[in-house]
Amino acid sequence: MMTTNTVAVTILDKEYRVSCSDEEKAGLEKSARFLDDKMQAIKQSGRIIGLDRIAVMAGLNITHDLLVENQTKSGMSLNINEKINALQNKLDFALDAFGK
Image (cartoon, rainbow, N blue to C red):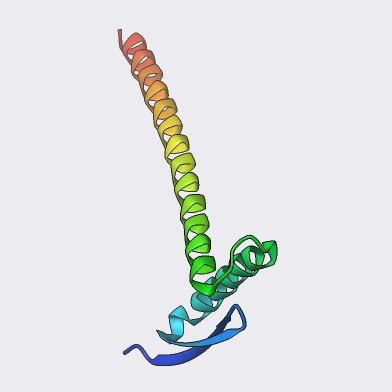
């Protein structure tokens, strides 16, 4: 049975209470610190005013970073698959040549 706790996290100097399991607590706290860092940086830039706008900009920035990272990983995965296919073809060729 999962135990649910209330965890206090602080984002932009405001405390929020969030329910989560013991297993999720460390991840939640890490996520909150990450979001707070992003929002603090946007606030300190002075270009964006208002908590809601800062939150939206932080969300957009985080989403953009995630999409770029996923696209990079997808490209690397494709490259690895191409190399695996090339190795399989070489192995098949070698086995065919050896078998004759």
